[in-house]
Image 1 (tube, rainbow, N blue to C red):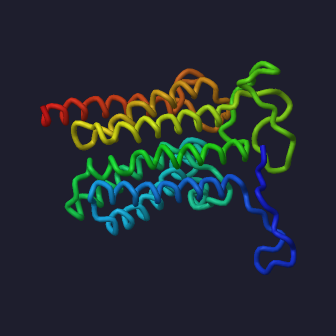
Image 2: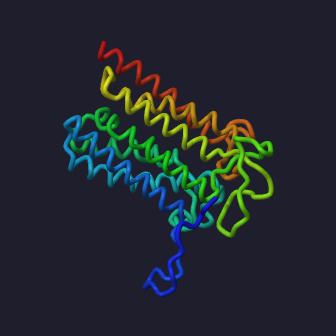
Image 3: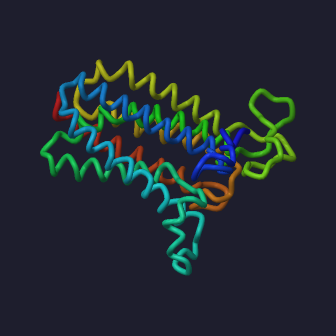
Length: 264
């Protein structure tokens, strides 16, 4: 709805005439809020703050690279004809699940290397992921990406995007505000994790709650998504994100049973 946050005047060196995109600003804000959260929570539970800050840096890099790789694999089926597409971040295109998978693997690598408890670290990071993602989805709304399917006119659940050079969403009919749906859901998920974290019964429970609830939320919201680049495992029935969501839930339930047994 507002893809350009600020247009720099021509007289400013290096930045003159260039635009600050709302999407990029809100994604950066999401990462920053996640950083503040990890620092705060690590201090509260007694983890080494410096190590957690170092890990956060690696996680951010992994999230960006992983989300870009999955975007290309989903939206560019013949990527081998132009492999440089993977590094052309400025053209846009990130998939959250790719970033989440890469981040989880990075945390596994780092905690093994530093001899830290993976689940304790994951519990610290997880609410920050939900918070940062909620803010980032507002950037999607501003840019018009990840837009919804056509919906009824004059509805509380639909929006009409204005015509513009930078907006990706269709502007000739009302569509579901899928970005706002997910942003709201992520904020609610953050609050659930925020209040539950002090009541958890074993290390890793906060993380497991997230990888059960978020896939359920995402699978439901995929029903309202209308952008075609997200890909389908089964044409127009099961999207790539819904398929990955099913796998996440299965993994989470298996881990939950194992960890629960250890702490009975």
